[in-house]
Image (cartoon, rainbow, N blue to C red; front, side):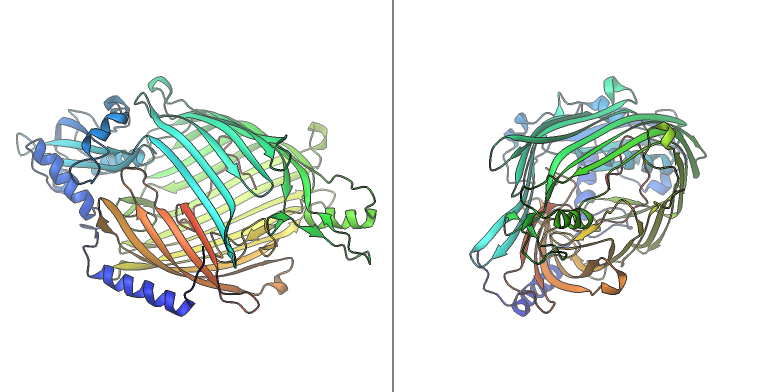
Length: 606
């Protein structure tokens, strides 16, 4: 692939296209909660049942006399795909939807309960559209409810491609292919495979997961993968995970528990033009040309119990135990200068460490939400928690109980979200300190902020910044910046030319259009400017910049997540603007920041 446009020409084209979209049929929110696509679907479902939609606020407190569940086909009369194709798809069974409902016949209608039901259903990967629609009842004090869901195509091949363009064309630097059946027997059970590829290795594996085992609150998620060396074809590692438990699902839930295991055994490499990058030590005069590759292991396991209090304001207390082992080893190369190898190890390898810890945790938040569209996805309702969130987690470790350090660890975090019309402003800060009694401390700080403006005509601006600082770095861990996320157009993470260090700062600005319905796909555009850098010292941070254009598409028949194509161009001196980098992936380049809650079922892999 060759590129012949100048940056100014490309940006002019995208700005013209954005303006053109402004005069097209753009999806807008109705009362801030429903897009044109959703409104049309709700009206059609109500008409088929010979019912009349009413304002949800007018239904508050009325007696629920009937609940209809309408599961829409993947393809309908609005799609160019023939309807007979639906026969190949496994439809969601009605009980799978009904077991998520938080209201029943004979109860009074509560908009809060209806909204929570919709939020829970939107968490299911197999559903794209989710609506809870009140319609007129048989008497003024009665109401009927229609729960509308649309399946996504259950046989899927999820693909992420990362490419770096050069004078001879575009080379694939990373590839992930995940073929799955997402709705086995209509029960939302996922079975499938996973294939990953980079210049040095590839992996092949299988996955299986189910959110409700036999209709209970239990869920499991398991995957196992074998890593092969591309040059030799021989196995060189493996990775996988297993999680099982009953997490908190609703505001009424009081108890939850979970257990999880994760393992990784691989050869880590840094690449340069598709080959392993070579290291030249400063302590020697000759060019050492040592390959930057080393053996790395990680094992994590734990068990926890959660007790929750409150409804409007929630307080979740967790108790548990976890074990976390990190191991890294550099293989000696015959003839290599030992001092050069020691310098490579000090520069690139994380420190081996084992920690076995009991822990106690408190997380509190409010059950208030912003309902909007066209922020992280297109033309589908999205829910973002408002108000404050606070997290505190404490854990000790001792060499007397299999740990390599005697320490006291504390993770603290705070988040606050404000609505801005149909946009939002959110700030998130977390601090992790492991105080070790012999001075081997490890600590990091992360602060993120986002402003998503209200819809301005036919789109909105999204500004997102991040600051990360490992101010105590005993474990010798570093951040990487480049590729398809924070600094598009520069070399991808793990490749020579990407930026790496314990200190990172980045700020991203995007203008994202609303969506236009084209052959039942919701299509939008984006223009972006990225700035960021990673370095060994704060004083060395020097923001690199890039700009580019993007294409966004949502296929409601396939996914709730947008498909993204970004073309980024470096703008900083010393980096050629063309041909830039092209990235194809699902999901926005930088999703809305969250206050991540540690859980043994989804371990922190940093």
